[in-house]
Image (cartoon, rainbow, N blue to C red; front, side, top):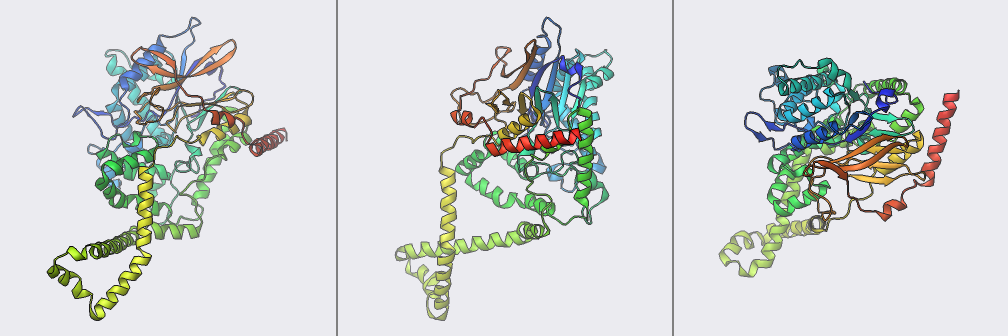
Length: 566
C-alpha cells in the first residue's frame, strides 16, 4: 500500500521526517550486550523526541504525521539464526552471513530487531495510539518491507510493545493498523513536496525495478528463490563483507565517507586489513559472479512488466500522472550488476570466478616475493656470510642454471617490479593523502529535476547520511537531506558538528502554507533546534540545473501534458 498523499486527512497534519535509523539486532536480551553490527543506540533519545512532539500539539489541535524515509530497519545486518526455525536454517545456503533474504527469513529478522529495540517500538506505538500518523518508506537496507508478511510482523510487534508497556489494556490493534501506512517509493503532496529515500540515484545501491525487487529465475535454481530480494552491489558488500569487518571494528560503517575508514584501517591495522582484503572477499566475489550468471529467457522481462504494472497502479492511487512517475523512475542510476549483455556476463564470470582469481593472486604474490628477495640479496650480498651466500646464491648463480636464473630475474624485474612499485606507491599515496571535503551530492540534480517536473517546493531525501539543505530552483525550491540518527565519525566540520546529530525535518501547517525547517533534536535540552550548516558558495553557484537539463525537463513535461490531453 502507498498513501494517497493528497488525502485531506494527511494535509491537516504537521510533518516530521526522519531517515536512516538503521535498527539492527540491538541489545540482545539474553546477554544485555549490543550486537557488534548494531548502529542505532538511541532508543531512549528517540522516545523522548516523540514524547516532545506528542505534547507539542498546537492550540488548533493539529496532530503529527511522522514519515520515516527509508532504512529504518537494517535487515542486511541481522545475522542471528540460532533460534530460527529448522526449515529456515536448512534453506539458507550460508548461515555464516545469517538467513537469506526471502519473506519467512525476513519475518524472523523483524522479530530479532523488535526484541533488541523494545523502547523504540513502544515509543512508536504510543505515538500512534494518541492519534498521530506514521508512514514508512522503503530504503535499500529495508527493501524487504516489500513483503506483506514483513509488514504484518512489524504491526504485530508494535501492538505487542504497547501491550507490554501498558499491561491490562487491550492492545489497540485496529487503531494502530489504521494509522500506519507503508509506501513502496515516495510520499507526495501536490505543489508542496516530494519525499523518497534516494537509493535509486546511487549506482551501487539502485534496484533495477524497485516496485518488483525480487530475483529473476535462473537455470538450476529452486523455485523458492524466486521470492528472494535481488540485492544490489552495495547490499552484497554489506552482507557478505562488511558484516565481518564490523565483528572486528563495530563502528566501521559509521565513518563517512567509507574510504576514510579503509584508509584508517590500513594505517592502524595493516595486517588485519590485508587479511580481509585478500581472504574476506572470497564469498563476495562468488556472489557477484552468480549475479552475472545466465538467466532464463525473459527473466527480467517479467520483473519489468510487474514493475510497470505497479507503477501504473501507483500513479492511479497517488493522483500523479503516469508519465511523470515514469520520468522520475527513469532518473535512476544504471545498476552495476543487472541486465548485462551476454559478453559482459562471460567477462564478469571469468574475472570474478574465485577458482581463477585465487591462483592469479598467488602468482602475483610469488613473483613479487621473488623480485623483493632478489633486490634484497643483491643489496646485502657483501655482508651475508660466505657459506650462506654460497649455499643460496652462488650455487644457483653459476653454469647453465645461473644463466637461466639471471635471464628469468631480468624478465621478472623489468616486467613485474615496476608494476609492483607503481601499485604500492599509488596505495600509499591514497592512504596518506589528506581527507577531502565531500563532493556535491549526486542527489541534488535529481531533486532539481523532480521539483521542476512536478512543480513542488521541496524535495526531501536521505540515504547519504549527510544532512544538507540546498536551493535547487530559481523560485526558491529546496532540497533537504535528513542525514542519519546513527553515530558518524568524521573530522569534517567538527568545530560545529557533533559526533551524533539527531536530524529531522519539521513541517508546520500555517496560513502561509507548509513551513519546512531542517532541525536537530537536542536531547540534553529536551527540545528541537535548528541544525547548524555552513554556507557553500560552490553549491550556491550550482542552484540552477544546467540548461540542457532544464530544456529536457521542459520537453518531457510538455510531452507528458500532451499525452494527458490526448
